[in-house]
Amino acid sequence: MSWTIDEAGALAYTLTGPPPRSLSGNFNPGMLVVVLLADGRRTMGDIYDRLVDLGFSMQDPADVLLIFQALERINAVAMRWHVESFLPLRHICYGGECGECCEGHLVGPLSLSEAKRLHEQREALKQLEPDLVDGLATMEVQDEQEPVLAINFLPGHCVFFGKDRLCAVHRHYGLRSKPLICQLFPVRVLQTEAGFRVGISPQCTMTHRSFQTAEPLSLPEFFESVGVRRPPGAIVGLDPSRVRSLRATPIFENNLQQESYFLSLVAIEGLSFTDLINSSTGTLQSGRPLPSAYLAEVSRRLRRFPERYRHSPLDLPTSRYGQHVRRFIADLARLPEPPAPWIEPVDPVRAYLLFSLSQFVYLRETSRFPQVETGIQVALIGLIGALWTTPEWTDGDRVHDELGRRMAYWYRMINVARSYQFLFDDADDYQVFRGLLGE
Image (cartoon, rainbow, N blue to C red; front, side):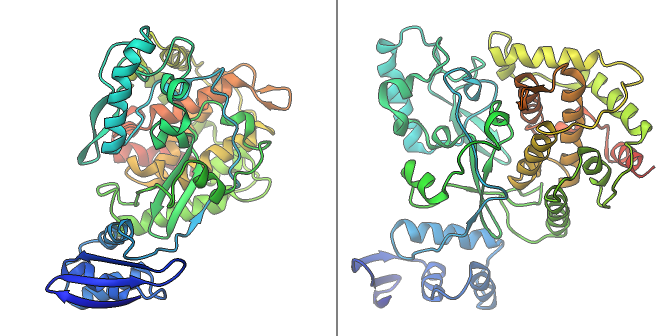
């Protein structure tokens, strides 16, 4: 890159490469220094440290990333994106018989251009699809500390969801006209302190059918298929008080250790679900039965879960999703006391339990919990509940649809702020429960 300063605060620069480009723009001093430090050898962490050394007020490494993203949008820098997945991405969409990705959970955030396009499509579809429910195309919801735009799901499902359980936008305008998050689901992308992570959300109610058998997705081809030149991931850190931060606070570092431990645990070949549960609090244990006191406490907390769980407006009984969730919750309330004897799941159920948990942790869906480990324990409790309330675990050589759906429903139900309070009174109560796995 060659450059000259034309006037105060303005930088004229030429990026060489195929093809050469000459552009100019106005930069504040911090952005200008970032451009000069971006020599292709320094990492973003290196540049952050150098900016701090130079006296710039940088509160968070994420600030540097946001500067880079702004510079990239005007072709001032070219970034080499590190993208990885924990396991090969395998997925087949069964939207024609499912439609549950369009029910029971919020779809967002949306960009302003996506929201504008949806409002325009909504007006046009009033004539093309008169049976669609009434309502605005989008809604504003609170995400962490800031409001974001999401598709209007207040009817219990997407307002573009037809009676045939198919997307009206897709039908009339094509796949590429839908919001990017709809095109991607259940593939989820996030940006961490080490780069981009890509995985399959365990909130998809049909992933259990194809997580082992579908052809692996090529990440470059996948991103190209949805028309993006860079991975479209939001920043997700490990400090629950500042989820969009990459600052290495003590809480961040502690959660990073818990995350790393669990992902190494779940990757152990042939690991049983029982061993995973026994080892989930930080010490590898093999060959032990689950403590009877632990199973009794899991059952007690699941029986009282229906009293504590607060249905969101998205769980309306008019939606198929809402009907399924209510039936699942009613079955939890009827669990026997003491619980039935523990039966170790065998493949393919064992494999899917471990797969869904790995994606839950890898995609940082634990960020809504005080600690990564707390999120894991909440997830485990619900997965045990899904096993206990589903009579048939397999259908031939695959996970039974009812079990796969109930696992996904649990992941959706706990994907709300302070959901651990559905199961635990406070931190002391959690520690008492946690201690049962050490008995």
